[in-house]
Image (cartoon, rainbow, N blue to C red; front, side, top):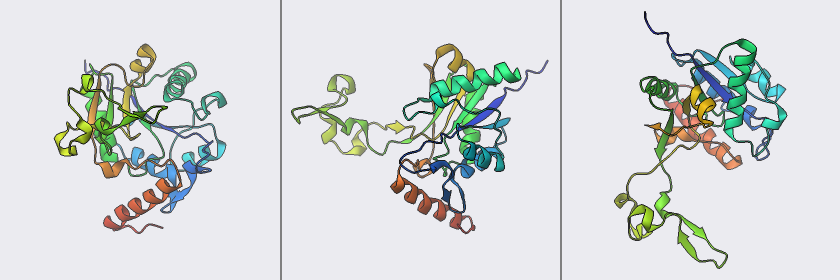
Length: 250
């Protein structure tokens, strides 16, 4: 008997209480609400079975639904605080689906609406990678780190700098004085895209697990909007991409 295809649900996490940019997730960028770019990229993915927007905000929910996401539940207010991490949000979502709909996805795709440059191709490739490696706990998309971790420090109360990664860990003498090209490649996730087995969330109480695969994506795709400057940078980069595609940004 042919084995059933794993169920893959994408979850767009869109909290309503942004302070740096009010109503950030639905603010217009290049003719659409910010969240629309993520929803539309996910809708085109051939290997996503269901697309859900997880939000605590009715206005975000209405716009997300307009662009094609489902809103099976509203996020509880206690899971929408400034410092709420991702894990309890996904624990709640997976548990709610199991208790109220009798279905638990085999894997979930974590999509933040603050990444309008994310591509459908990267989403599909990340899902394919996890499905091809059932022994892994998750997949995390990464790009080359914009600042190498071996060139970072802690700053003491006396204003003296200490290498953040000590020589006993790096095995390198004064890497902060070496050219970047002489250092081993370092990669950062930059809030771009993760695909996680639901069992990793429920059994390991983790968004990554112990063994997670990395998929390298182009750095220019990883624009993540956290403040007004980021928003304007994203507007320029997105407009240039649309222009290359022969589409005029509104």
